[in-house]
Length: 261
Image (cartoon, rainbow, N blue to C red; front, side):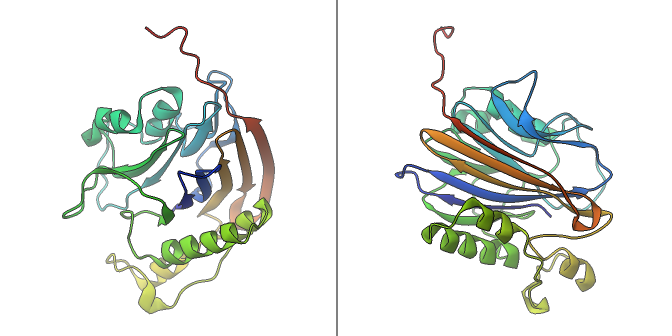
């Protein structure tokens, strides 16, 4: 039940602001956010099981993030979804071209956000009626979890509104982390109806999921400015115990085109 709250303002000095929680089984091996030794332009956490990542950015001003799309069944898929984020960050394709290049049937259900410094695109391989698989997003405040973008889940709707209020108020980065720490649960009548017991939906309904088995593993704030990028990650151990925290603040680098034909 990951959560990505984001504000997109393409005509401003900071086009993209992201506050995201990664929810995962605590036993799944993961590495905290850092610049990768074999991909020094990429700043992201790492899934040490499948090798990809769930959220990251590059020194060149690219950003990508992923949520799994909740689906029934236990089918296996040829490729790991975390490779989709890594592939975009490591490449130079436009958001549209990259989305078109994805062989969507090779992956379990996903939602993917792609930002190239100017345009923000949402793409999924779980099509909704009357909705395109991919679309460029207009300016706005958004919340995305494990259903389609626009699903009226309380943590998405309320989270997007609160993110916007904090951004409008000029609050510092600590407040965005605090927003992600919210464990308040909505009223039962607002919970999604996915055919699961209400107790399950209630447990997963808060922004921050505190649990010894499956819960929030990391809270991340990313501010993608035109000239500067800020990235902070607070990790968590089982039962919501705070783990290491890292912060990065670095200049956006121009893309080197000297080697391109």
